Image 1 (cartoon, rainbow over the protein chains, first blue to last red):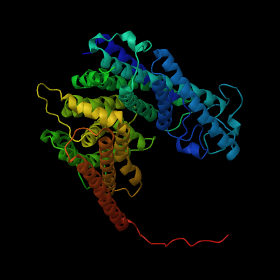
Image 2 (image 1 turned 30 degrees about the vertical axis):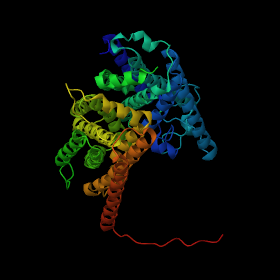
Image 3 (image 1 turned 135 degrees about the vertical axis):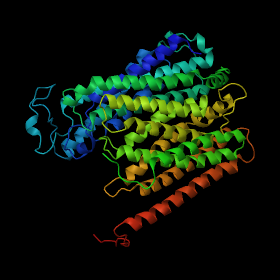
Amino acid sequence: MLGIETIILTLLMIGIGGVLICTGVFFMPVGGAPAAMSTATGIATGCEMMATGAGITGLLMSAALYGQPSYIIALNAGISSAIMMCVTMFVANLVVVFGKGVPPALATVDRDPVTKEPVKPYVTPGTVGHGVPTASFVSGFIGAFLGGIGGALTFIPIFRVAFYESLTPSASINPMEILGPLGVRVGVEHVPLFVLAGIGALAMYFVNANIAAYSIRGVIEGWWDPKFKRLPKTALTCFVASLVFGTLVVLLLNSDSFIQVLHMIGGGS
Amino acid sequence: MSEKKVTIDPNKLMVVGIVCGLVGVYLGVIRSEVAGLISGVLAVPVVIWGADAVRRIASYGLGTGVPSIGNLSSGMGVLAALVGLAYQPILGVVLAALAGVIYGVFVAKFKILEIPRLPRYTTELAMAACLIIMCLTSSVIGYYNPMPESGFIAPAENFENIFQALFATGFIAAIFWMTSVSILHPFNAGLGVGERQGRTLQIGIVTGGMALTLAGIARVGYLVMFSPETSPMAFPLGYATIAAGAIVWIVGIVVLVRTASREAAAALWTGIPPKTKK
C-alpha cells in the first residue's frame, strides 16, 4: 500500500494538471476547419489535436528531464510546448499572409487587446477573422505553456511513484521524493515505466482536452472571446474527471501484481 | 427527440459486446496459447458495439469532430483496462462503467455538452474501449490467466508478460491508437445524409480485422524480441492471429463494397484516365 500522503499528492498533482490542461485549451486560438479556409481566426485544426500536440511535446520534455526537480521539469515542459505552438502559429501566419494574401484579423473585438491596433476593418465580410493576430499569438503561447505544465504534472507522479516502488517498499515512499530531484540511477530496465507514465498522461490529456473542446464547440480566439466565460465550470468538471481517472492510476500503482513486477525489474540494480 | 429507426437494437449489441469481451478476457483460464487467438477474434464484436456507440453519440454533432470521441473512449479505456488486468478484468469493466457514468453526469450537469442520455453513451464507450484493450492485450501476451491461486488479485506473471510485451516494446501505443481508430473510424467514414447503421457497422468489421491483424503483428514482434519460454505453438498461433485478422479484414471489405455498390445510385467504371500530352 502507498502512504496516504503519497496518494493525496499524486491525486492533487493529476487534478491540478487536468485543470491546467483545460485552461490551456481555452487560451489557444482554435480555428478548426474554417481556419483552413481562412474564414476564422486561429490555427487550422481542432482543439483536441492542438492540445494533444502541445501535451505530447510537454511529455517528451518531461521524459527527457526525468531526473530533475519537479518544478524544472514542469517549467521546461511548458516552455517546449510553447515553442512548438509558437512555431506552428508563425508558420500558419506565413502561409496565410504570404501564401493566401489575407491579413490576420480578429472579429470579436474592435481593437487588438495587446497592441491596441484596430483589427476589425480587415475582416472580410461573411467571415469571422483570419490568421493568427498578435493577441491570439500571445494567447496561444500562454495556452501551450499551461498545457505543457499540465502534461508534466500528470507525468511526474505516475513515473516517480512507479519508479520508487521498484526500489523500496511502497509504504516508505516519501512524498517529497516525488517533487525533488531523482537521486538514483535509472537503468534500461526502467524504460517500461516511462512508457507507462507516458500512456497514462496521454490518456488523462485526452479526457481533459475533450471536456474543454466540447465546451468551446469549435472556434475560440483567446481570452477576450465570450466563450472564455465558460472556463470556471469546465475547469471544475476537468478537476473532477481528473480525480476519477487519477483514482484509477492510483489503483493500478497500488495493485500487488504490479508492485511484484516492479520489484522484479528494480531488484537487479 | 426520437432516434432514427435502426436495424440492430443497440441494447442487443451492448449485451453481445460485453459477453464477447468478457469471454475473450477470461478465456485464458484454459492456459493455452489458443486462448490468445480466440480472445483477439472476440474483440471484433466489441469493436462493432463501440462503433455503434460512437454512431449514436456523434450523430448529434459535437463541434469537435468524431475522432475526439474515439480518443476520449480509448483514453478512458486504457486506464481502466490496466487496472482490470492488474486486479480482475471484471473489476476493470465495472470501474470503466463507473468512471464513464461520473464523466457523463458531470459533463451533462454543467451543460458542457447538451446531448440527451450522455452518461449512457460515455459509459458504453469506456466499457467498449476497456474490453477491446484487454482482449487485444491478452492476444498479444499469448494468454491472460485471470485465475489467482489465492485471493482476488490476478497472478503477477500476467503483468510481467504485459510489461514486456506492451511497455518494454512500446506496443501499448499501437494498441491504444488502434483501439481509438477502430472505434471512431466507422462513423467518421460513414457519416452523412444517407448514413445507415448496417453499413456503418460493416466498416466496424473492417476496422476490427485491422485491430486483430495489428495484435497478431505485435504478438510475433514480442516473440521475436524477447523469445519468452513458450510452447512450440506460439509462433504458428501468432501467424494465425495475423491470418485471422486479414481474413476478417478482407471479408469486411468485400461485404462493405457489395453493400455500398448496391445502395449507391450507380457504380460505374470510368476506366483509367488517358494520358494527356503537354
